[in-house]
Length: 508
Image (cartoon, rainbow, N blue to C red; front, side, top):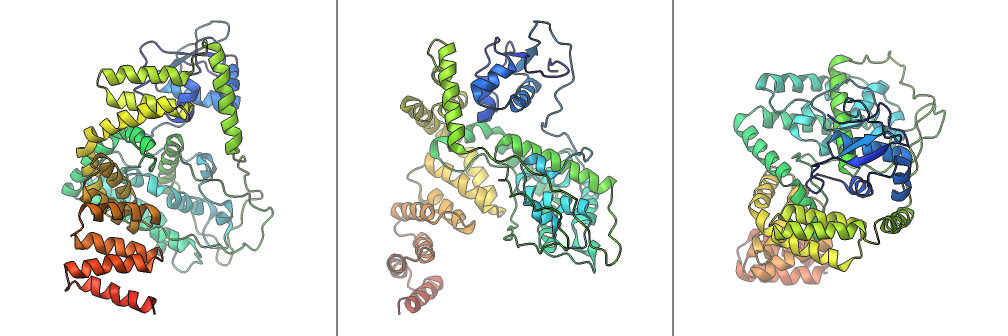
C-alpha cells in the first residue's frame, strides 16, 4: 500500500522508497524523467519546474509512481502522512468498473465531430461504439470481452452475448446508422474473434502462452526497439480484422458549437492503461445500463457544447523544456547528469549479466540525452546481445502473430528476429511479407525483401515478393528483373507468369 497524503499538494516532498527497484520498473519516459529528478528535498512544485511540466501533471505522475511502490511522499513540514489507499489514478484494471468517464480522458481517441453524426443512435451508445472502435486494437482478448483471464467458458459466452446486444447492428434494425454500421461490424468481428479463441481450450491455451511471452519480454522489447528504431511496445491482442478508412460523417441538423480539432491517439503506456480502464468501464455499462432507442423520427441531438481538449505541446518546446531541466538538475547534482548516472548503472548491470536491466537503463539514459554517443553505443551493444538472448521468444511471437493474421505486429516481431539473425533469409522475408500485408512502409519492405533475396538468390518466393514490392513502388524495371529471375528458376510458376503478363501491359 502506498503512503500518500489525502491530497498531493505542491509543497509535498516525494522521495525514493527504500529498496525500490527503479531500474527494474516498467517506466515510461515521462515517468522516468520525473523520477530521476527526485532527491528527497525538492517539492512537487520544484520538480515540476525542473521537469518542465505542469504541477498537475507532476502530481499525477508522482501519485502513479507511489502507487506502484517506487515513491513515498511526505508533507513539507516533515510530518509523515497517514496510510492512504492507492491513488485513484488509472492503473491496470482488475475487471470491468462502473462507467464514470468519457473518451476524452484517454487523449481524444476520435474526432468529437463523429459523435454528432445524424444517426438514430443515442449519444451514450455512440460513445460506446466509438470508444470500442478506436481502442480494440490495444486490448487483448480478455480485455475486449471485459473478463478476467481465469474466467470459465460460461463466463466467456455470457460476456460475448452481452456485448452483442450493444455492438451487433441487428439490435438497431431499421434505424439510420450512417458510418456507425461499418464501425459496429468491425467491433463485432473483433469481439467474435476474441470469443472464438477463448471458448476453445486448445486455442485459448496457445493464446495464453503467447500473452505470457509478450508480457515477459516487454522490457526487453522496449530496449531493443529503441536501439533498432522500429515500432514501439506491442499490445498483446491479435486481430485479423482490418480497420476501414474512417468515412466523413454527415453533418447534424443542429450544431450549437463547432467541435474542436481531433487530438492525437494515445501512444504511451499510460494512455494505453487509461484506454483499457475506460473500455472495461464501457463494457460494464453495456450490461448494467442498456440504452433505449430514440422515439421514431426523432434523431439524437448533440450536447450543447463539445468538450475542448487541451492543445498539444509543440515538440520543439518540449525539447527545450527537457534541455533546461537537464541543465538545472546537473547543477544540483555536482555536474553529473541523470543520464550519466543511468549509464553507470547500466554498465554495472551489464557486468553482472543482467542485460534487460542494462538495456533499459541505457534506453532511459538515451531518452534524457539523445545525442550522447557513449550512451547510444552502450544501448546498441547491450541490445545486440539481448536480441540474441531473446530470439527463441521473438520467433514464437512472430510465428503466432502471422499465423493468426496480425501482420502489423508480426512485421515488427520478425524485424526483431532478423536483427538478431542478420544472415537469415527466412526472418527477413517474413518481415517484408508481413509488412506488405499490413500496408507498411514500402522502402522498408524493399530493404528487407532485397536482403532476403541476396541471402537466398535461388528462392522463387522471395524473388516474387521483391518483384511485387517493386511493382507497388512503381519501379517496373526492377520488378521485371526480379520476375525474370524467378521465371528462370521455375518456368512453370503460374504466379510469375501472371505478374509478367501484367507487367508487360504496364510497359507498353
